[in-house]
Amino acid sequence: MKTRLPTIAIGLAASLACGASVLAQQPAPAPAPSPAAPPAGTPSPAQSTPLPTTTAPGPGAGTNQAPAPPASEKALPPATPVPSTAGRAPLVANPGDPSDVDEVTLPAKPAAILSGTAKWDQAVPSLKDAIAKVEAALAQAGIKATGKPLSVFTRTDDDGFQYEVMVPVEAAPTPRPAGLPDDLRFGATPSGKALRFTHKGPYEGIDQTYETVTAYLDAKGILVQDAFVEEYLTPLASPSDEALEVNIYALPK
Image 1 (cartoon, rainbow, N blue to C red):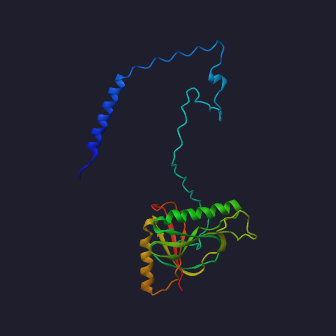
Image 2 (image 1 turned 180 degrees about the horizontal axis):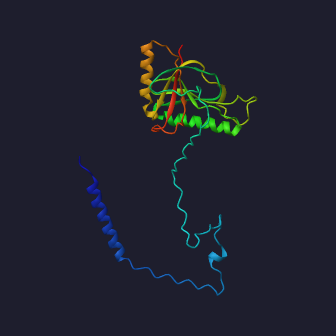
Image 3 (image 1 turned 60 degrees about the horizontal axis):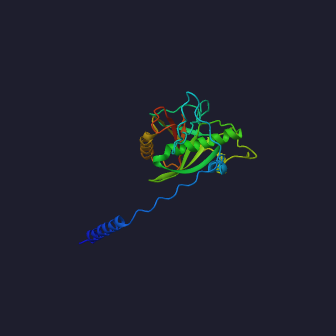
């Protein structure tokens, strides 16, 4: 397709040449007279009309003191602290064996409960943050936590899950202390006959333990409730924590 840009360029060049010729024929203008010098003692414009200032100048860097670096525009948020649960008793006193299945009886204990939803790839950060929120609220209200934190998986699908994080307490407070989060409530931990499976190792490998759970239940023909319970014997710190130990409880129907 043809373009009209070359034609326009030629016309502009010709116009500029004609303008330059006309300017060359015109006489140069007479120089403007120099302004008279102001009388002695007359203040300068900056002295007579100073610019307004809105803030006082900040202090500069002192001797042998480097200037402070600029703040980062996208500073990373601080990591959620992992609450210590050392000294707290699990739901069942005797420890489990990763190579075996235990039939146990879970006691109903008063607990602070926080519900939420999460994606599977964010399971550990979501559960960790929820536990930390409950622990912080209890500490602020002066309510003593007495047991290991739990997660009850109330609903699951391929994308994610719904959960209830529970922290057993000495007693449910009456009346409810002021300042507690609105979504924090009090209830009881799951109770009754249960099968206990123990997982030791990173949380990112817990699916293999659940495969063992499913195979055992299928082989025994045991029907269980839809809600599995995880009890964190060690803090849920990261998906790759080799020291993690979790009790998994399946409650038969």
